Length: 258
Image (cartoon, rainbow, N blue to C red):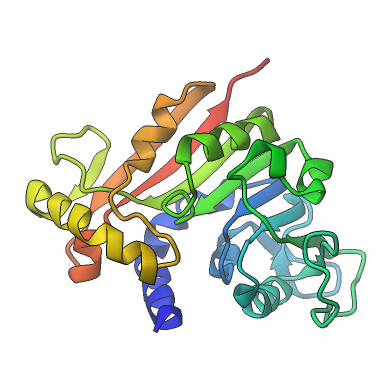
């Protein structure tokens, strides 16, 4: 059931994600990628072997921080399908059963799967720290599951290089239609559906891998400080019941220069 809902969710939000994902570049860290279905929206090009894969002139390296090994098989498959050379961090995930299944070539971008989170600054995996600072860090529906969004965002800032960019698309509590970030509004009753989100969150956290559907993640990003630019939009689509309880905020925040 979770796999089906995750796939349906990706299909509905791709129209928004693909407006910012092509900008991602350099040394990249993605938090909580799940199956990493969004890799297809990164910059792609025809590589030296004739394949249409992620562009090594744009993406130099890619690290994913995923706490759930259930995701790894399909995560690896999606990464390899997009032309990445996949390896596992054996310090955080020592299971030798998971191996690279594609013969690497010089044109392939390195892709490392690391088990862990950014919930605690003192518990960030060494493989992530060794790769920092990052040019780009991204989250897709991950701030709804972290233990403390502000702590995670502070850790994201610490891992970004000065002038680096944090890209995000997140479920949020229903925004007020008068909110200037709202760019798509189909008349959903924000007060009613916001209360529905509050009511269902305790149960949804259990069935949705820790997802809090009532967090105001876009606003939290903007309020923590430390950015020189914050640019995000919110959408309140009316597609189905799931969309009514999962409006979106998506955009980017650029870390201030030191």
